[in-house]
Amino acid sequence: MINNNQNVAEILQICKKVSPQKKTHICTLLSKILNLNSIEILTNPNKKISEKNKKTLLKKFFFFINGKPLSKILGSREFFSRDFLINAHTLDPRPESEILIDVVKDLVKNANFKRMKILELGVGSGCLLITLFLELKKMNVTGKFIGVDINSKALKVALKNQSRFNICSSSLNFIQSNWFTEIGGKFDIIVSNPPYIPTSAFNDLDKTVKNYDPRGALDGGLEGLECFRQISKKVFYHLKNNGFFIVEIGSKQKELVKEIFEEEKLFFLKCLRDLSNKERCMVFQKKKS
Image (cartoon, rainbow, N blue to C red; front, side):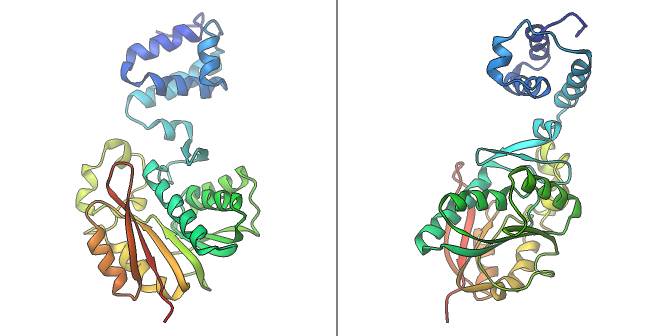
């Protein structure tokens, strides 16, 4: 039981007894509420906690022990070593998706791009496109970065993240669009992490995913391939000659996705595996005819 006289160490110990397998997450929760880093939490065991912070901690801890992901409680999650705002309208950034960043960086380096246009389809929190902008900037690559999403509420989060990293709209722009409907012109690189979970498999997802991530960002239709098919109808026409299309895929989808985009005249280059050794990222190119 948490009371008015307890300090950081005592409250941390009570929380750990309730949920002993999640000690690191509990420490993170407490450090965020108190605005202290994890080292400060451990080195200030006698620090008293205000009544307001205790109420906040109890509320958030209740959500946490009942299965709500820590990221959704705190409203942020790390991606490529940066902290991004997220909420119920955005898919949580995942470590597996970081491979898309590495792939784009390698393509840009090998193609010797210095100024370019990049489009992301389905931006969600904006973490992927913003990370690309910041990482390519470190490589002295500039240009125009455009991200689209059909969900206006997700775009509000993306815009907050853009402001969080002080990126001006003349360099990076978010637009509400159903894939390519509001987009004109051609791009050097198009990236996407579309919904690819088959509808029949949705209820088999971990409850932290199916109960807290937006279904629209996960459910890819009957076979999980509907969004790939929609994107494939226009992606060729929005790529410059020799431009690249990089897309994240789900389990055992490689051959089916390959067939979908090859039918629309894109050339398959490679498929890369993530840290769990799962096929995760496919790279296509529009070959100059």
